[in-house]
Length: 507
Image (cartoon, rainbow, N blue to C red; front, top):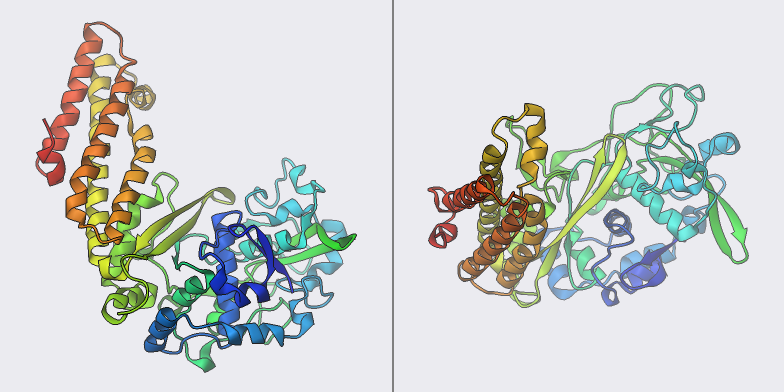
């Protein structure tokens, strides 16, 4: 059975031990990257569903969360499992892999770097194969975790296998199930708490099959000659363990250790997701054209700026993760409360087409009895930050208009950016915002904390603006530009439509 490394515990554990000790391990299963942490949680959820160790009704889910239901059934299911099913390097049914790729391993495989999503480039890198051929091996545990990340988050595009083998569709990679949206995990104090919070009710005969390998089970998996329609999932065990990549690992023995030295990546599975069943944690968000779409990661907007969307879902949604969390205040009279809040861990992958850019994630406190206050605090806190940032942009424009009276249109962005303090403001505003939420989750009235939060953000913005304007020349033009920029900033914060806390503190 493959091992996993819990970065926050600094220990290596088997999947069996992770479930056996779930209530002794930290609930912050972050892994080496946010995506790795999510992929491990997805896999543990799949095991629990496959083992029948899950609630079957909302009432049972509440009892599990409050009473700390143990994972004895999942532990026993793993312990009694067939060893070959869990063999990462089995010749015919390697765990999470496709043994059909073996005949091309010698000719087409690359170094193990191709397996690591953050290092892989676009899986082909035809202009530079050097990093894909890097011979530095991965441990079996590292390779297993990287494999799980590929299944869940792998990007679309083309792998390196020749299109002449098994048909032209072999190397067309499918986009991972979570690649284009924010995944929200409810975190508790321990790993056991986290799993219980995220194991949703499912009928015992509808959990579906666990995906051991590409060639095992009764699934009619994707063929290579033509691109098929998406496959409907058979249940949550199938959904959380699906094989988003057709992968094969090549091991070597190094003393007692097993290392992975070569990998081969081909096509992945294509799923047809059911929004009512397969997007259990998705945060609803409306696009400009009116069509609904789950909250997605943005390369220009930090995740905390959309925290209000999570809290709004928790107060308004009646189904899924947020629907269940929203009922805890009504039905959970014992157990965690405002003095020991949960966290909502939101994770997204930002990519430029087939190239990974970065991970984005955020931890947001959640207390069942404080959900309305948290929603109010996040909405008003976001509104204050957005208004101040808009003021900084307008101040920069005011200074630019005076300093550059006859600019070329193409030069404006760079010239105005010289005076725009938003680049410093947004990162600095995150911690005050999170502190506002943490105090609210612990029971402090949000309306009383908001004025101090607003004053802190305003002082930060004024300081950043001052330093930006220090680049102005020490002449009449510079003094007029500074005066006009500062005036424009104050006017915007005091104008109708600005949050009341800003209007009251404007001079």
